[in-house]
Length: 452
Image 1 (spheres, rainbow, N blue to C red):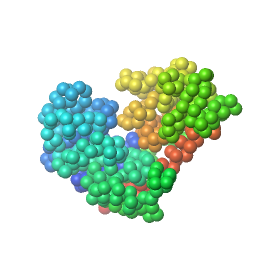
Image 2: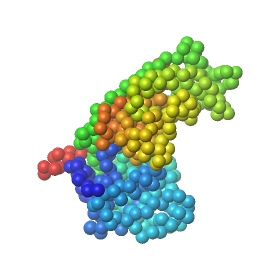
Image 3: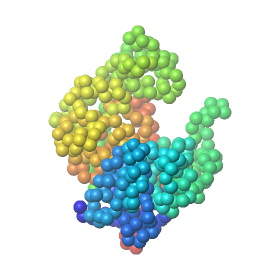
Image 4: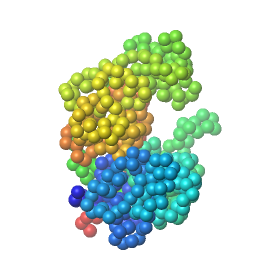
């Protein structure tokens, strides 16, 4: 296929070529893979500045999306690659091939560096979904930091750089520039830009930015970072966000309040408890959805309020395909028991969805989050169960609301009134404000660059 890049794609590719270390904050659906591959082709096969490129990506993206992109575009012909996924023997075989690009899933980064026995002689590393390296305590982060000084060029790609706030940025940029801009130590970064927010005596549970901290952080990273929103550069379809409220009965809500207040509940003669605040949050989300797991992981039914609302939404779709995002396994079981829904969990099912052969599909945000193009199969997404993760939330929405979608995209959120669902929606909106501020602060001025 002939590649006719948008101005912003030309700009982003040139930015990667001109900056040995770069962070490319691209909104979902803007073609970050082909942008980066175009730069890789230039560096490997035209200027001969790079010999071996390691691309680290989510499993399905490394296995399917990047190979498809390399083989898809005419201008990338000649760029060779191998996929280091599978058994250890299969991975080692792939990594010992003489090619330009080596694709590996992020879960195997630590293995590659500390256990494979192979030399880490890549002179360029691309981290697709840089936000998955936001934890400085994770094995993948620590392993990659050990070999980072050997790498001449690093590119970080993501559409959600600070899904849980500005604290996420330290590890991501530490990996890219080895601490030049935000410091070498997380403690110094925290003390310089943040102050305790929620705490209990000496125990600090969360931090908030100090006055002026956001602007200073953005200023420090701006020279190596560009950001782009799809709405600025692409003709995206209209997006409609809708909140559908459901209410529990008085008895059902009393069960919910008992669990919330006492962290223990007797339901159908079975005692269910929550060990800590995090467990309680999960239990309350389950109850808002209509069921809850006991200590033996057996689902205890509470109500069908969301299922009833889901039925109304499916009926209102009037035969148009509907994609349903669920969170808990018992959500999935109850949905497929009531509706003729099919899981999108394989390349075959995804192909059938995009061909318009599946009227009701269900998908988990953790598997839908990255790299799947589902816009050909429908334009209606229903969140049956919500997630605290802004990254998974935005990425899942972007499976339908992206370039190539021909219809208005409608995203419904089924929210149980008076429950933790309402808090999750508020949290997602607040996190989005922080992330939007970051993206705006380092937004690429493509038009200005084009006219220079």
